[in-house]
Amino acid sequence: MFARRVARRAFSGRLRSVPISMLLLLFVVTGCATTDAGNADRIGAASPSDYSPPTSSGPPDPTSGPSTASAPVTPFVDGRPTTGACYALSFKQALEPVTQKRPGNCEKPHTTRTVFVGRVGRLVGGGAPIDSPAVQRAVANACPKRVAAFLGGPPQALRLSMFRPVWFTPSLDAESVGQRWYRCDVIALAAEGRLARLVGRLDGRLDRAGWQDTYGLCGTAEPGTPGFERVACLRRHSWLAISTVDFAAARYPGEAVVRARGQSPCTDVARDRAEDPLDFRWGYEWPTLEQWQTGIRYGVCWMPAS
Image 1: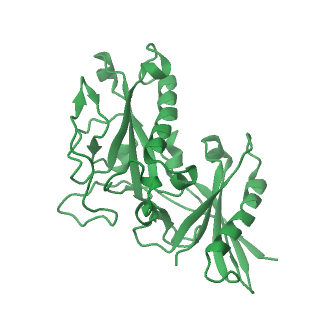
Image 2: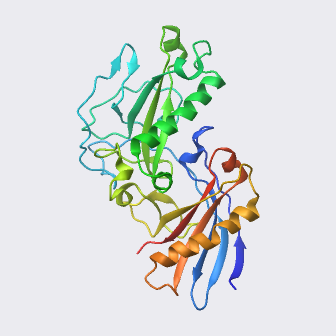
Image 3: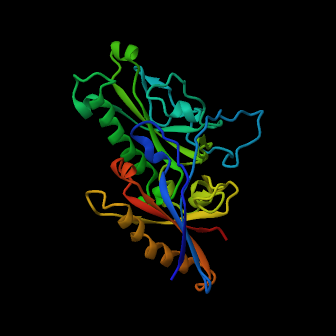
């Protein structure tokens, strides 16, 4: 039997209404499997902050490097942004529904890339205002699918990465002169509340080996402890996300169920990866009701980085 102790901590931080999944806000249980085992249940903590995009005069971000993105693209066609454009946005700017930022050279430091530009009329017809709930819901539903298809890989790979979708629509002034587009971008978090520089070819990135070393989901400490922060795996870290636990229920089955559901799968996957199958540590995060309602219907398994 595992001994148990409980410590509760406030977990704050939210993006705009739909892309809450950009920061995986989950309860945490951590444990170990040894001859003298113990187990602790905690709630993780995070507090997103603003970030200014890197400049050539500042220190490089650990996730930065020479870009091998495609050649620069035409910024706008008939007032619309174009697929393949790159932007140097801050974390805060990336979460705004409208941006006036002009695209830059993809060979220079940037934090977002446009993976798709579509017409709002094809989602909801031509009558709804660009800022209406119907349009915003339709775009929020379409863009995560476009970004996932762009990155490739199975659903678990995306969940274990720091890649996230963001999207933009025209301002009301732009709509008044006929602009009715929506733009889907991909970003990567370097840490909670901070964007990473995007480097190299990203289309199909999650189908190719080695993405975890750069854009994988890692932690600076044991999940749920005061020093824990989610970071890209190229940054300094001591824990890494190793697997996910899916839930098939249509309705939230309750905290007790989702909490218990991940114990065995996370223990098994951590044991399989451990150097000593009789002495290893593991962690598990499960979704809350609020997160379930935003589409997060899976938990995440963690273990210490080797």
